[in-house]
Length: 441
Image (cartoon, rainbow, N blue to C red; front, side, top):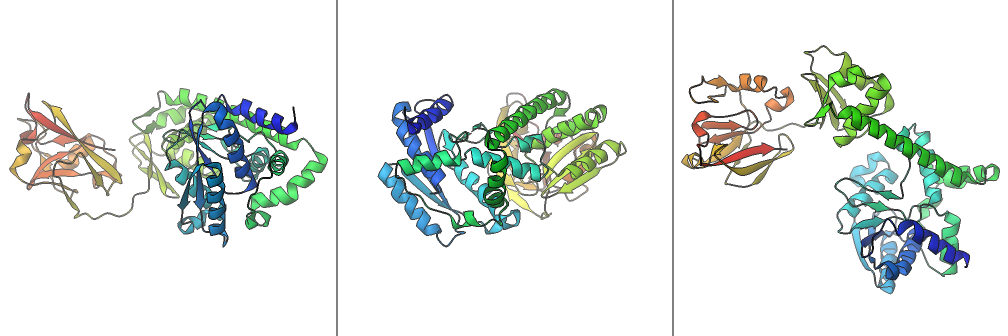
């Protein structure tokens, strides 16, 4: 068997168990040699496995040649009879993150908007080594040093597959030349001011002179880091079983663990909340403040666009909330969902029998949603005393930063409900009456 056939069969053997027959696969196509080879190879294998291929080219507009690259990809896909979608993105708002990071973020967002079973990317063994070294040079932890998996299954998103991850750049070039493939060269790849290019053009060739097998050994190290990361996640899951509830983390659980184990649990909690991972020194300081504060203290630690707060012995992770208009009024005309900007959340309205807010009584006057102004009162139960909303919020342990932002439901000028806190007795649905439940998330 020729070396090219060996190459194809090796890739096929590795990815066939990951990509079921008849899967729809979206190929990320930049027009460079790696993605051109990936497209060609998957096209060759698709008949065998009944894969349905499409491609996506993300037009960043960074290079003056960007339009030419898009035309090249369109012509290439036309020859292969593969549907191509070209997505134009604006990198300017994300430039503060660095051009490479911004472009990567926009590409992944573009992939997420497409409909497919898998997204196939052309990362290879040399990319893996570069990624590992970059992460280590940035002081990454075990998760960061895990580099890239061949199959990345992400909650709420399309899985990523990297068919060429165990192939070297040299093998990919040999395949392209043997099949007389054409591709484009991104001029920025020669600019070693970019950290990745510096490693590629200046560091790794020198490393290869002394350690010829560095690709295999460093890739093996990345796999070891990945296994260690999985073990840390399993440990965090065990610690989280009794510590994380309703999106909050118990301070007592952090205090009971050794500092390394507590940091592991805190990282797991932040990751689950969708928050970015803070730098190591910031994480250490965060853990110290959360654990050492007085029992009645309200702690708020800001980093980037996020906040970590402590209230009533629980830890919360949330996006930093901007200003809001206290006089905001939102009419409700029976919608099932409404955006509530003060909390950056959605309100959900669900019908429920014999409970909740009486829909019939809401017909008395126009229904609106408003913000707390101070001094509001309601009677939460028949034959009960009228209570101030301030006391009810404290009694229900509503976090202080939410109290002025939660929606109040009014019928005319009468306060009907604050979700999760109380419904005015006069508006509670009777037995066998259709009611309405208002939730936010």
